[in-house]
Image 1 (cartoon, helix red, strand yellow):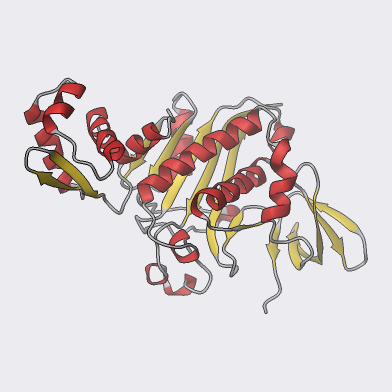
Image 2: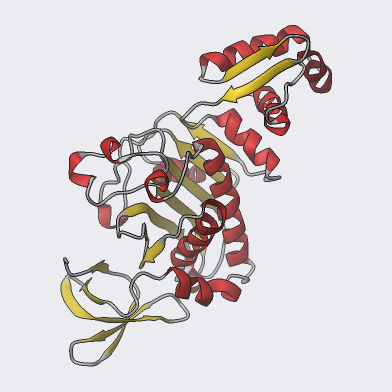
Length: 329
């Protein structure tokens, strides 16, 4: 999608409900009036609605309900974010696509988003249902060259930063189920995170952070087997949500979270965020540890993000990775 479409949409976003003059827009962008009209007509075929006002211009009254690259770029421009972003109609997995781009030598950081994934995945090789175009399937690709030990709390930090962002911007209070799930107040899952890395001997060379976030999906949009356990921002919050604005805001939030992590500023908020958004401390859980179930009560996390479990024998165990299950009510 061209920068011209993004510039045109930026002008309409800035104008809000006020009409935008085609003549003025043409002059500001350095193109002909015919070019502006042609672009508006093409955008109409992609789901945008422009209402014409005699002698006043056009007003943008409706936008597509699926990801649109020019619109995301326009929203990023309003947020003063200069991220490299590519939106695909379909891919196997945004993480896999990001990994391929890194392997081919593409400069990082950059974001890959998709309207649909055919082989979306979560932790432990699980499938992530991702064929609803009103949700967000996104990967952030990085070349951090940081010591491998520094990576331990990365996913947990990114999840907590996302909880804080969604709480502040959308008024949706989520909880983080260690280590990589975001849940609504009723325990249903809204998002999953997957971090994958390529390591050199003593440093993280390539790093991909993947996020699947259910945004506008309603219960009927999920497969039958997921309707009792899956949720979305629309289901957990209030009012309508525009997917392209959400995408731009999430991109901005992830950039900030990564920058805070890379610059070691994340520690300033890590423990307070955990205290606010943690979904496990004090609860009895079972954790699959090296193929064996270990039961106990969660006592919190250590400075590296490892889960602290007090097992049934009263022993304190640090768990760096594992699958947590809660007893069924």
